[in-house]
Image 1 (cartoon, rainbow, N blue to C red):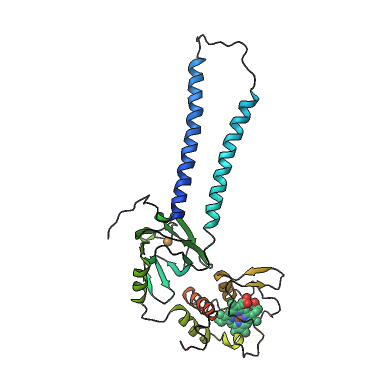
Image 2 (cartoon, helix red, strand yellow; image 1 turned 120 degrees about the vertical axis):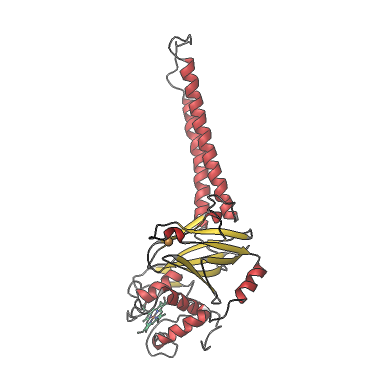
Length: 317
Ligand code: HEC
Ligand SMILES: [Cu+2]
């Protein structure tokens, strides 16, 4: 496939179309304002040119009604634009709880994706349409940026933390995926495609590649190998919090604050345990920063998530 870069492919989601409308409105309204001002300017230049016989007596010094009108009308229009944009923007950060999660790891110079059942792909991302997709993005080296023009959406991928992006495509097809942050020599080669399919095709595709353990199964093995059980198992003599049901739970911290445990929180609990201490516990958890890479951490998170349903409890990896 040698598809050139289309700068503005047709929008592939409702959110993307809303962005298009917003942008058109903004450009249209600004152009209209600019045109109106220039038209009046040109008219005055002509009318009051040197030597014209225009009436210059009794020129008004001010017109309150007019001034109020040209201040208030644009103000209202731009506040409306602001509200619209703020609404769309904040919606970008509220992934629906039932969204399908895909883990995406960026590295020089490729995109690696892993689906919940363990199917992996490189520089391609298969997704079902009409389904909210939540991408959890991590970087293994430098800052990258996950950019899909057809979705009118872009999210930085920063080493040392997770970022999240969600979307719901409603048109099957292939969309260009680009890296929009200069990340080294082959930055321009760091591109791929999103393949949006009918949900039943996606389900078939997903099953076709489940040839190795899913994230949660791998996470369970990593969890055991690193001795997490020594403290976090129910039978342990160490006083450590119960991890099942953690994701989405409100956690009270020793410093009095309350956070909602999301992927970033759980990740930080492993690599920087001192950053947030759970209220009522001692800060005895060691950091696993040097033991676990981003893929392993994500697997552990998916394992912890699977505890909610009990699906994996006691199951062997
Ligand atoms: C030496 C005992 C010990 C080990 C080993 C240990 N933890 Fe912990 N962990 C704790 C304690 C105590 C806390 C609560 C205090 C804190 O927040 O640091 C905790 C907190 C956490 C939290 C936050 C829980 C919450 O309710 O907010 C997570 C997530 C976590 N650990 C995961 C892990 C994982 C994954 C491993 C293995 C890679 C691990 N822990 C290994 C003792 C341990
Ligand atoms: Cu990059």
